[in-house]
Length: 160
Image (cartoon, rainbow, N blue to C red; front, side):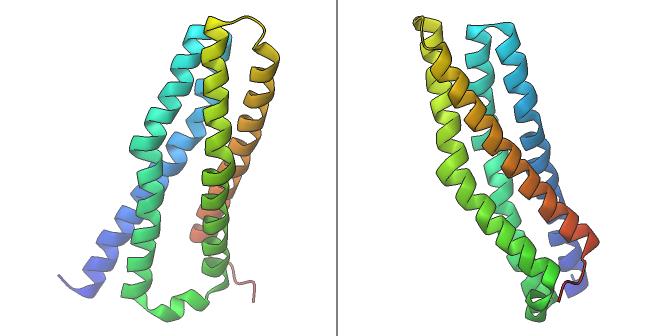
């Protein structure tokens, strides 16, 4: 295979990773909303399903983005790192990763824990509502940042 063939193969993997990562991320709010409307047991199921999908598909896809992105820069040329759209995308990716690990994931875990308590205990509703709002807000931030990266990767604007 030629270098151009390798670029194509890795680019396809990079795009598939983006589709999987963003595609599943966009469904989390829908899962949560359906669970909230269906009842306490269903809410727990929906939140656990989000965690299950995240561990098995979304997070590995985000990791694939970093690996295939690094390989693409290596194959295409390190000077690609001087492109403003790529510099911004990498910065957003780092911020997104830090937010997902330090804020969103703990917020989602707390929301799930409180949802489980709602099944067993009365009076946990206010704490759950607060935890759900926090997790939802950070989920929106993570999704917006991911969409911003996709836009930059497709549009490739020059900022400097």
